[in-house]
Length: 147
Image 1 (cartoon, one colour):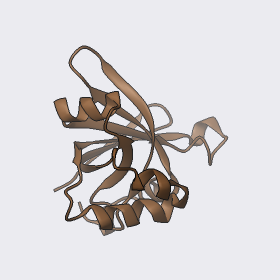
Image 2 (tube, rainbow, N blue to C red; image 1 turned 180 degrees about the vertical axis):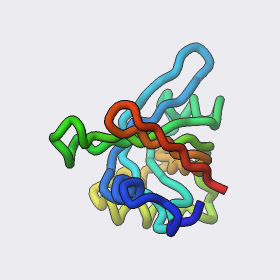
Image 3 (cartoon, helix red, strand yellow; image 1 turned 120 degrees about the horizontal axis):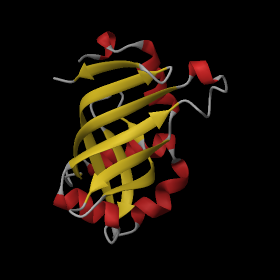
Image 4 (spheres, rainbow, N blue to C red; image 1 turned 135 degrees about the vertical axis):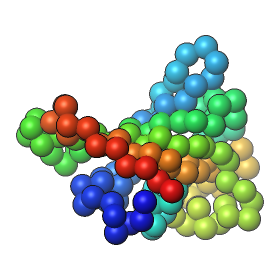
């Protein structure tokens, strides 16, 4: 999927949300975590920081398939206008060669994380989207595949 093909409500949600719920799997149960995140300008990846000692980091190392949930509750109060977006994709720690560019993406959205990113035990994880599922009005479901 190219940016021009992405529905406006999806682009808006990706740009306006700085937090999401990450779902990982570590072998025994699914696990969810609230994460600070940011999307690349072309929406080709999202990034979030975490300490390497966390359960979410261990889970991503064990199983790269993850989902990230975003919603518009912070921007919309009318129940009939609520929607949720699930991003399904593959997660991995950023390679050293692209980490500076990924840090820049994250710091544009979350400048207060500069000190956290500078810690040697902080990993920067990227999620490459494979599919986006948009649920509107609690029952309308649209899916969009990424190439």
